[in-house]
Length: 190
Ligand SMILES: *[C@@H]1O[C@H](CO)[C@@H](O)[C@H](O)[C@H]1NC(C)=O
Image (cartoon, rainbow, N blue to C red; front, side, top):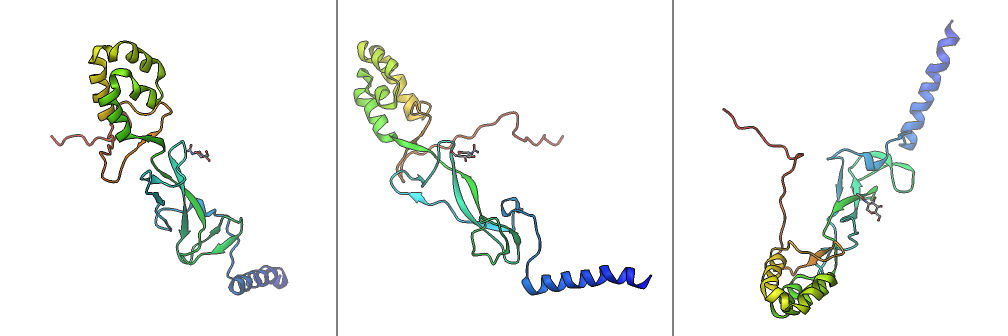
C-alpha cells in the first residue's frame, strides 16, 4: 500500500526539481496567441519618401516585431519555449498600414487641373479608357475635367491598382470613417 503511493510523489518531486533547475515549463502556448498586455510591439518603421510603413504589403498589413513581457513563457519564432525578459522578439504581428505604389497625390491633382482636358490625369492613374475619352472630347468639353478634379481632390478616385496615394508629411491626407452594419451604435437613452 505504501510503495504504491510513494512512486508518483517521488516522480512529482523530481519533476518540480527539474523545473526549478532549468526554469523551463513544457508550455504549449505560442507567443503569437498571447493576450493584450502580455507583450509590447514596436511601431512600424515609416519611410520618409512615401510616409507609409516600410514593407507594407498589398493587403495593407505590415509585420512588426513583438516582445513578450517579463516572466512570460511561450513558444517563440524558433519553435522553442523560453521565458522572456521583455526585450527579446517572440513573434511578429500584423499591423494595418497604407500601401502605396508610387502614385503621388500632388502629381495627380496638378495633372488633373492643368492637363485634365487631355485626360493625362486618368492615364497617370491607370485608367486609359477614360483617359482616351477625355483626350478626344477635350475632357467632355471641360465638364468631365471639372468632375475629375473634384473626384481626385476628395480622393474618391484613387490609383487603379488599388494602392493609396503617396502624400507628403504636410499633405492633405484623408482618413475615411465609415459606418456599416458591424458598427456598434449605442441606442439613445429615453
Ligand atoms: C497579407 O499578405 C501576406 C503575404 O502576402 C500574408 O502572409 C498575410 O496572411 C496576409 N494578411 C491578411 C490579413 O490577409
